[in-house]
Length: 177
Ligand code: HEM
Ligand code: HEM
Image 1 (cartoon, protein in one colour):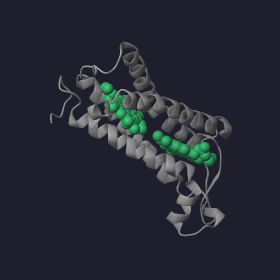
Image 2 (cartoon, rainbow, N blue to C red):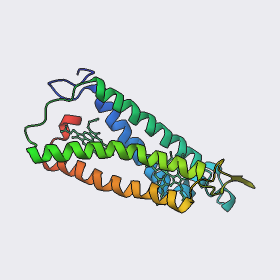
Image 3 (spheres, rainbow, N blue to C red):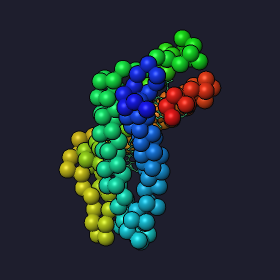
C-alpha cells in the first residue's frame, strides 16, 4: 500500500494518523471525565488532596493530540486527496468536506482551551499531598474557559456523529481502513 494518498485511495500515513488520533481521543475523553478516578489510580490514594493529580497526564496527552493535528494538516497539504467515493452524493461531499474542516478546528480548539484553563484561569487545583497547582496566569475566569472547553466537546460530538453517520450510511469505511 502506498505511503501517500493517490488515485487508488488514502495512503498508509493518512490512515495511521487518522486512527492514532481516534485512539488518543478515546483515551483523552475517558481521562477528562474520569480525572478523579485516574488520579486515584496514579497516586494510589483517594485522598481529596490528589483529586486532580492526573490533570497533567491529560494536559500532555492533549498537547500530543494538538501536535498530531498539526502533523495531519501539514501532511494533508503535501499529499493529494484521493478522488471522492462514487457512493457519496454531491450533497454528501459538501457536508463531508465541511465536517472535516470543523473536526480540524475542534482538534485545535479543545486542547488550546484546555491549556488556557490549566495555565491562565487562576483556578487552583489539588494535585498532590499538600501540593496545589497555581496557574502562572489569571487572565480569564475559569468558568468561561471551562465553558469553552466543554462547548468544544459538544460540537465535536455533533461533528463526529455526522462524520461517522455518513461513513456508515454510505459504507465508505473501507476507504480509511
Ligand atoms: C483533544 C484534547 C482534549 C480533550 C478531548 C479533553 C477533554 C476533556 C474532558 C471530557 C473534560 C471533562 C469536562 C467535564 O467534566 O465536562 C476535560 C476537563 C479538563 N481538561 Fe481537557 N481535554 C483535552 C485537552 C486538554 C488540555 C491540552 C488541557 C491542559 C493542558 C486540558 C485541561 C483540562 C482541565 C484542567 C480540565 C478539568 C476542568 C475542571 O474540571 O475544572 N484538556 N477535558
Ligand atoms: C474520532 C475522531 C475522528 C476524527 C477527528 C476524524 C477526522 C477525519 C478527517 C479529518 C478525515 C479526512 C482525511 C484526513 O484529513 O485525514 C477523515 C476521513 C474519514 N474518516 Fe474520520 N475521523 C474520526 C473518526 C472516525 C471514525 C470513528 C470513523 C469510522 C466510522 C471514521 C471514518 C472515516 C472515513 C471512512 C473517512 C474517509 C472519508 C472519505 O473520503 O470518504 N472517522 N476523518
